[in-house]
Image (cartoon, rainbow, N blue to C red; front, side, top):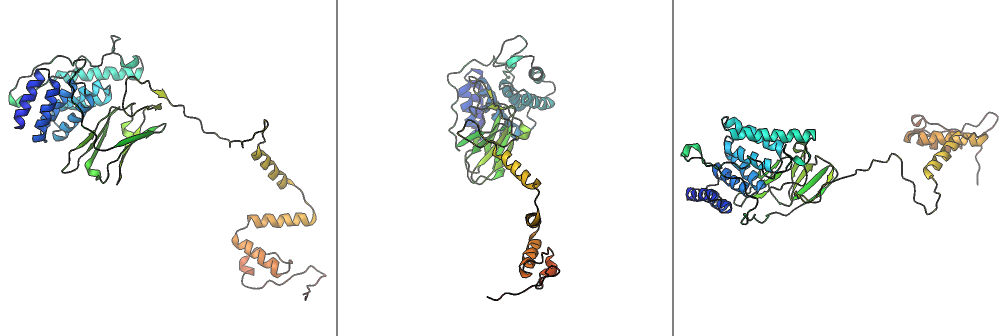
Length: 375
């Protein structure tokens, strides 16, 4: 039955009825979910419908099921190219070329990717323009050739370029889990509210401007979320944390720009974020007066005057004792208090080991004696 739907899907594709082809491939996949060719061929139908993020998702599934399937890498590279994910596209195409070294389509697309990568790095071409100065939404060779496996004997048939629009595009499934995001100057945090999902059932992949999230729970339909992101990210610095109530994804921004939405929009011009410099000085206290006082400076001046003040007599002695007490540890303070009180102010010791275990007797100055007063 799955093979019957597959054959009908191929017929619909050859008749340029790409939306019907997607539906038929989906029916075939429901009956044969472990067939990588079905995912790879549905990816090509998505490419024809300009649904490039869905095409990347299907290509990734095909690669997961068969890591040596060359056409899956070709579909992924083609979709990523159209999404202007040139580095990701090049990596996929180079991997696929290793399994199909004689396929010129890989070579052509790799060369185009490299040309765009060089243009981005040198800033010689603005807005990802090709050498002729005109921007194209689909590169000349981005329209892949729909083909069946070489083993089944079916001949390859070249198709015309991707049409500018389709009136009967496939309708995406309603999201199974709610998600939201917030941003910081250097990162965007995406939260998917999926409760009680084991970490091994969550697969997250990052591209230059693509996020791919797949949640597979046994006995349930797989949840997939593959947006083209508002701005570019640094995949190596992105992180995923699976918690008991949610999945938190931290996307490291490649540029300090304000994301007005999570998903890409060609009608919105990114705006850079002005990150304020950290102030090295403490802020001044608010005041309604036109001339304000710097109380921090005034406090520092008072402390300096107190430190440099020269005292005489008892005042100088009291200041000395006060300074010693303030800089002392707990044992020294206990020793000073005990010795001063028990000796009636005639002995001041800082050694707790000496005075802690006995009563401190008074030691009056020479020529004087201690007297006890009775009330």
